Image 1 (spheres, rainbow, N blue to C red):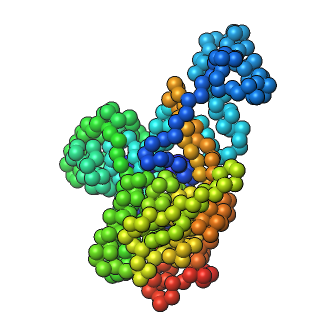
Image 2: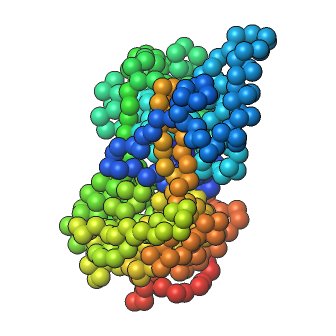
Image 3: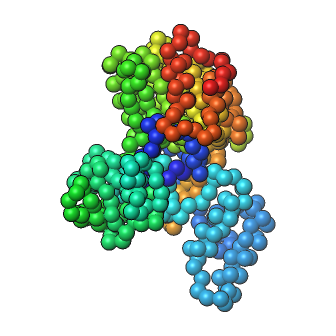
Length: 432
């Protein structure tokens, strides 16, 4: 789960978000509030020194301990890093499951992963894009005819405090030119640990280049974009992630649309790989007044319902809702879309979703600071559909042309068409 939150979040060159499949799908993490499940298993000598090994497992673990002790006692190829041995053993156990969503993370990987799914990153906090000399965005690689441009410093970010402005051209980072890099490479050059300083050479207008020394910090990404469409009659919310902050942003944006008198809403979950279950429940509950949001099924087949919260701001059945999905909508996105579809609270428009129907739990490891995430449950829609490796089928299927014309968004156009009609569009199978 791990959508890589760009250090300087890339700005999509098209006016609407075009569907894409993230390289890796965000996990749905079980968190009790903000607290993590914690456990302390240690490794040591046999018998009393190996409390993590139950007596009934002695025979199964004997080869492991034989190998571990032999390495410690007899390896002659150099110094032994016992921490690396333990990490390797844990990683091997998790990898042997063959589950792409269960994995071991070192302490640094764990910290960065948690920041990512929390909508946070360590950097300066500005949106960037590549811009060609003719003004078009999305060029690559960077060079004389393709420049790295700041499109917007994030509110309250180190970039804003340092004085960066929209339109600033980044010439170099810490004295090194960006020529030849992609936008991702430039982003990685700019990002870095909290408290460290990065120096940007900035071209502003026709003036001489200026140097900006910026102290990096933990920055909260902007995960929700909200605007009015169709002459101000439709409220549009594009949600990029499922952090707790994103859920709060959705509630705020919904409130603004309702206060403006809008009764037609579009929730755009395209390209959203997921995040926290708590955020998915909170967002779904804004539209569903009562009932189940999703079911959890544990390893023994036991099922537990997670019900909607009762403080939703958009539960009035008079409000028309469309949810946009595509092949990049996964995990928590599918929890929300599936809940609204089963409750007949929204019309799903777009393409088949990704199909991730499992739930992962973090478990911190005592001592070395790492953790592992383990698939501990399946999640089912309110109607108890398991969509794993299948995905959700939209009520209104939109077939995208290949190639997709620049600047076009047939899925959004179809959503506006559905909202403009007198029928909800539920149950239709049409192509555009």
